[in-house]
Every structure is written in C-alpha cells, then in structure tokens.
Image (cartoon, rainbow over all chains, first blue to last red; front, side, top):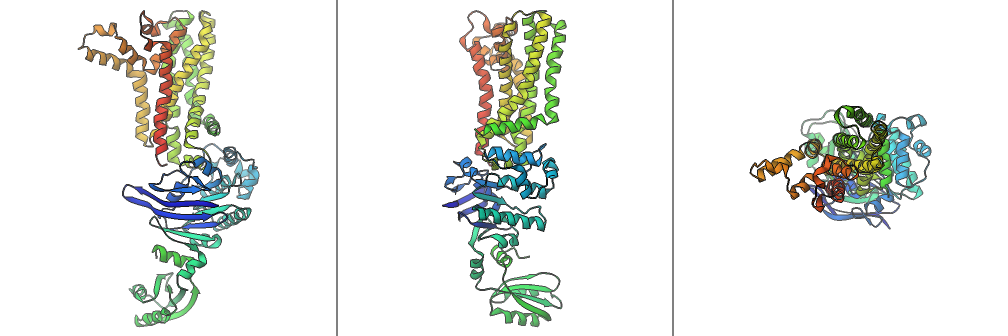
Length: 304
Length: 272
C-alpha cells in the first residue's frame, strides 16, 4: 500500500505557480526527505496533503483516502508537525498533549510522550505560549506522535532546534520508522535529509526535479568528484572561469581562499591549469566524494 | 462527533480568558441593575418587569455575544492556532460546529444564570403573576443570544481581513439592534411619499419586515408568554400568520443558522 500518492498536483495563486504537476509516490515504511530551497513549494505541498489548501489541479491520497474529500479519514492515520502554527494560549504543554489525545481518541500517557520529546515535567506544567521556538517544536512533535500514527508528516521539523535537538529529532524519526511508521519530512537543510532518508525528492520552483535514493542521485552525477582546493588568493573572475571549464558542474568559494568544485574526473587537471593560468597559486588540494549538498546545489541552482 | 472535543476546548479556553469574564460580568450588572431600576421606570407588576428586562437583554446580550464570537475563528486562523487544530483529525465542519456550540455555552450560561437570578428577585419584589412563563422567557432569551453567536461565528469564518470583521461585528450590531426600526420607518415613509399616517397604521408586510429584526422576534416571543405591550403590534385582531409567535421562532433560528452556513461555505472553500 502506498502512504502518499500525488497525481499531477498543481497549485496556482493568480499567475504564480506554487506547485507544477507534482507526481509523487511514497511507499509505506519509507523515510522520505522532501528537499528544496525556501519558497520552492514544500509547504504548499504539505498543506495540500492536510487539506489546508485545495490544489488547482490533480489530487493527493493518503493511504487511499483523498485528502480533500476524505480529509478526516486521511488525517486520522497521520501525525503532523505543521509549519506556521502557533500553540494555544493559556494551556500548558501537558494540556496540549491531552487535547491531541482526545482528538485522536488515543490512550497515550502525556508524561511519557513529553519525556520522549525532551520536555521535562516542569516544562510540561508551564504555559506553552511561554515556550521557546525549539520547545514548541518539541511539543508539537509530541502531539504528532500521539496515537502511533502510520505516517508522520513533518514540515521543517528541525526549525528552532539546536544541533543536539536536531539529532534527537532524527533519533525519533528512526524509532518511529522502526515501529513501522512512514515518515515524510521536508527540509532545506541537507545533512538532516542525508542522515536519515531512504529516498529524497527535490523540489525547485514548484517542480519535482528529482526523486531518487541518495546513492541514485550520486550516480546520476556521473560519479562526480569534489575537489577542495586551497589557493594563496582568489583573483576576480577566477570562480567564473573555473565554471566555464568543460566537465565542471559547480564551483563555489567556501571560505577565504578555498574552492570547492564538483566535476567529472577528466576535468580535474583542466581546473588546476586554469588556476595556474589565472595567476592563482594552488597551496593544497584534495578530492572528496560529492555530498548531497553539492547535488542539491546542482539541482536547484542555489550556488552561494 | 469530534465537534465535542473542539467545543470543550473552546469553552475551556474562554473560561481562562479575562476578556470573557469582563464581558459576561455585564450580565449580572445589567440584569440585576434593572431589578432596582424597574422601580423608577415601570409598573410594579411581574409582566411589566419581564418586559423591561427583555428590553435590557435586547441591548446587552447581542453586544456580549458579538464581542465574544466575532473573531473566534478568524483570530485562530491568522495566528496559526487553527493550523494545529486542523492538523488533528477534525473537519472544518466539526470546527465550525464546535466553535459555535462552545461560544454559545460561554455566552448563554452566564446570561441565563443572571436572568434566572434577576427573575427570582423580580418575582419577590413585583409579585408572582405570570411567573410560570419564566422558563419560556429564558428559552426565548437563549435563542435570541444564539442568533447573535451564530451571526458572529459565521462572520468570523467568512474572512480573515481584520477590518471587515470589525466592520461586520459593529455594523451588525448597529443595524440589527439599533437602527432597524428607524430604517423600517424611513423605508415606509419613502414608499408612502412621507405620509406620516402610515407609521400609525403599519401595513401587514411591513410588520414582517420589522419582525426580521432579531430583537423584535425576541420581543414577539416574550409577548407570547406575558401580557406585555412590547410586541402589541403583532397581536392586534387580524394580524397575519407570518407575524405569529412561531414565525418569530423561525426567524430567530434563521438568524442563527443562515450567517453560519454562509460563513462556513466560504470557510470551507478557502485556503487557510
């Protein structure tokens, strides 16, 4: 059975196209990473899944339930960490969970879930409107975990979390997946996705430009190599001329006088020659396997 | 049936809000205040007291009902609290029903309590003549209040634009409570080429127009129980069926439901 099935989903706001014929299937039991720069349409897609937004064309199903016509049936089986929420006023963290438990007709123990998402008993009795963004994010994740959902839908789950919190979030995602839940989460932070996902989809300008496993994406780069080159100085236009070289996919300046270039194997020498010709001395260089971030930059053209 | 969960949450929230307490505190002040004031403004018998009290209800209850409901859903929507609620398995219809039920409880429970107390004190002071009709007076008041809760919750679902909601809430109050009678008279005068005689002998169809005002329907219902002249217009010999007490009942129910349904349809069709 498929967890999420999107058929030709489009969403237009006037003349602006937020989603452009997105076709996507997420199988049960997968951890699926939904990647894209801010404004690519990730949240719009998730909002269509939640029936917050009606698609202009196409349809989405969750476990065979149409998200618009049978929204409640679809949402009964999912736990959601939405984007752009705010917590209820005058309610403690614990009361938030109790509300979620009543709404889902579940019988979870609020204390247990709060503990799992890292909110201690003192926090649990405080009003949630006083929480930091990170704490609110933990609380709403807790609400999403209520009732052992078959699908977790997490929109930018690590927003507001420190690296430690982000790691805990990943642990929870893995635990839930081992329990049998499908996980669909969006992020613009690549390492989050790279660390836990079975498959990723890359959304750019409302279009799904790639859906594959991480290995598959690597291969589609043609066994791309990453060169990390340290130079004595960077001359004006060097970066641009490196990009011109046949076989170079991306070239970015990482920090002061360090270049990162992804390219085919054959192009390595040409790059060094080009730098030499430009009067730039190479102090050091090494090669690395291309990371997802490099691929991401390539797919979305958001080179820094 | 998840509207119950939503309603419960709504009531719970309101009980903890200072605004709610400040607003509903108006009920005992106004209604019990009238028990004292009736000495100066009305005849010392129970039906006259109830008629006067109904007049106070007609001004205070709509104000509190609109104040506590007109931003209910719109505020949650713009703040993002609705995102959280609708991430749970609640439909938008459950949300609408739950909210209107919740707000109705918050407005009507203190209103009816205050009215009941005022009724008891009034009976002690002005005699028990007609006191058996008090329950139906309370029922009519509840329906009258519910009409404005329905109107205001419907309004809060119809748009998120703050100025339209404020305008609608204030405008609704002014039109439905303050100016309706004047508007009706003005319309009649224009239609009858400023023959002022028409105001003393209102045509039947214009009675219905007047009864459309929730306050008039309410007064008409109160009149069904008490022999008071608040609604004397509609009980003269040969008054048509469409200004009978059941018609008033139907109109109040319509005031509660029609704006709610219109607002809900807009809400259902729009993106959050």
